[in-house]
Image (cartoon, rainbow, N blue to C red; front, side):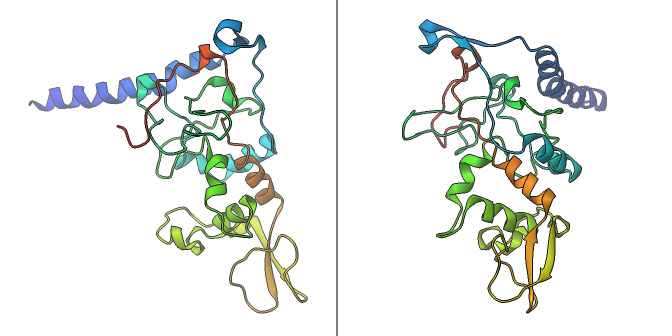
Amino acid sequence: MSLRTFILGIAATFGIAWLAVVVVPFFKMRDLAPATFDEAADGQTGVFIAKRAGRVAGGAEVYAENGCYLCHTQVVRPTYAGNDLFRPDWGGNAADETRGDTRRETTPYDYEGEAFAQVGVMRLGPDLSNLAVRVPTYVAEGQTPEDWLYKHLYNPRSIPALWDSTCPSHPFLFSKRTSYGPPSDGALDVETRDGYEVVPGPDAKALVSYLLSLKKDQAVPASLNFAPKKTEGEN
């Protein structure tokens, strides 16, 4: 293979990826028309309205300011660009207790409420599209999803299962203060010097609220849910 052919092959590979992941989504998202339910396909009618609970706008700003998008995507890839549905919980629940298989690809409407779609740059860490679906499965007894995320943000490697995590610590999102007796509500379960405790600051609270809004389990019109389902573990 000549050097010229090799270079052209690399350029074509990156060009196609850029077209699929950047250009096509941009034109789809810049002027979204309302999506509607179809009675025959969806069993209901009306306009689809994406719903998210949490401090979306403020939390998204903290997410961006701290460069979370550099290592994490928020895209369950469309079939033409790959397939993420085989990854456990990345695209939703494969066996939801009440609705069955809720997995689906990302749609432009999933970024409703954000000034900038946090699609991400690369996946050095896991995709976060359905982070709020996964976190409850990580928590220990007596712990809440908020507790787990605060501890992860403060120091990911303080969580035994993540001893080798490459995610940076964010202690600047928290404050240390003098402790007078038992830990106060909201204090982190982390090692500190005697007489001090660590509590989340406003930005940490906004970021965790935002992260817990990342749950794409809302029913969408069939016209938006065209992804073929794959069994977990299937490539």
